[in-house]
Length: 51
Image (cartoon, rainbow, N blue to C red; front, side, top):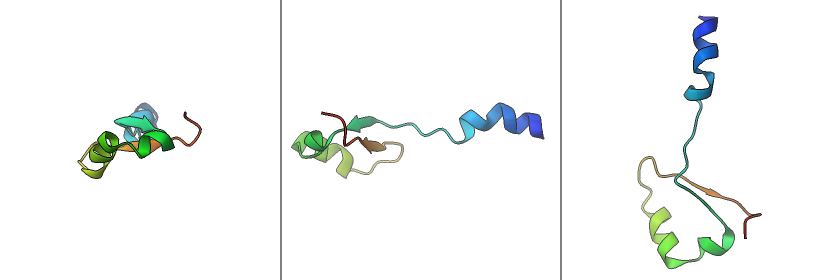
């Protein structure tokens, strides 16, 4: 059991993001239409330090 957990720890809690966006990109109409869809498997990360 411990070996199974050790083998799968990096895959079980892995989150895949479609895109990393900045505050500037957050206001663009084309980006808004992408994240407003809320489609399954399409997560966005907001990075405030990104320009």
